[in-house]
Image (cartoon, rainbow, N blue to C red; front, side, top):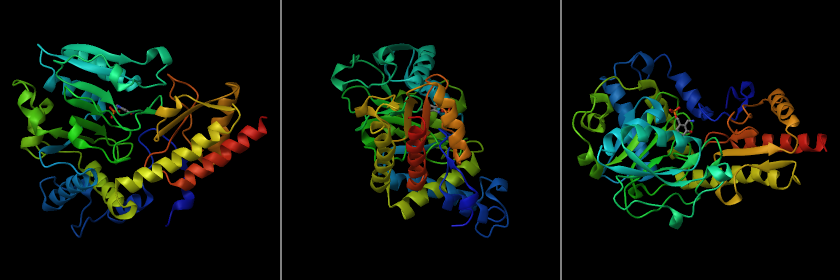
Length: 366
Ligand code: PMP
């Protein structure tokens, strides 16, 4: 692989590191895509070349996630943050109420946007534990008549994730899967709707992927602005207007990489478990020098959050790490401490380099 030495290990929470072979392929095709004599950046989204790109991106997603035929794949813009509003506009009619599991910072934002559109019921809130735990599913306070139950698959800021995902009978499950999308297999039929900003595991910023059960379509009220109505995306193959074409192209390459080089999501999940295990192993063996934020049983495989025994060391940790080419380890300002985001594209070598640095840093401050 060329170019590897000039690259750092980038632990950013998103936009995040992309697979090197994907970047290399994009570079190769930058001036002329598939013999077209132009870049995907310049190409009409109505061209047959781009139709093939968006077609393959959808096909790869369908194959990787085993998406049933009665689910639609939507390519949208506005980030997961727009989905917080849009899903509520589409599925939370004024006379209905929706349940929300408030598991962390992102779930809180989803809840507050939902509240603007209709009644919301907090089925569980992890605030008392600083969002370090997740609920026993049996303890959720669910409304049997709820329009949907909104959950967040992985809380990027706190670093907590349900190992098996949510499985709840009753109202359709609506899920923000932004930060663990494509990190492991998902039983899609459990969900009425799931969505993910692409800029962590699936590609660059600018694209939000939605996977929508057809059974949700007749719940959508008439009169929504055209671009905020999911039916517009369904009826126009996500091309009612100009889609985020280059982002979709990179997502096509990322999903191709997952398919051909990784060998699918089971294989990806095993690699992700191994990577997370390396870092949590260092935390657990550090005799209290490092402490994880998340309760052990809900530790995220994607965002490893931890504190140092002495808060004064955290700044030094982040700056010395960056001197070694290990970047973006500062935790989110709302939680503090440190965070290493190790999405699909972070190789085990990068994780090992960080683990070795953590061990030597701890030894140097002993
Ligand atoms: N949900 C989760 C779980 C996230 O991690 C993020 C982004 N960090 C968002 C929502 C917001 O995404 P966006 O910036 O695409 O609006």
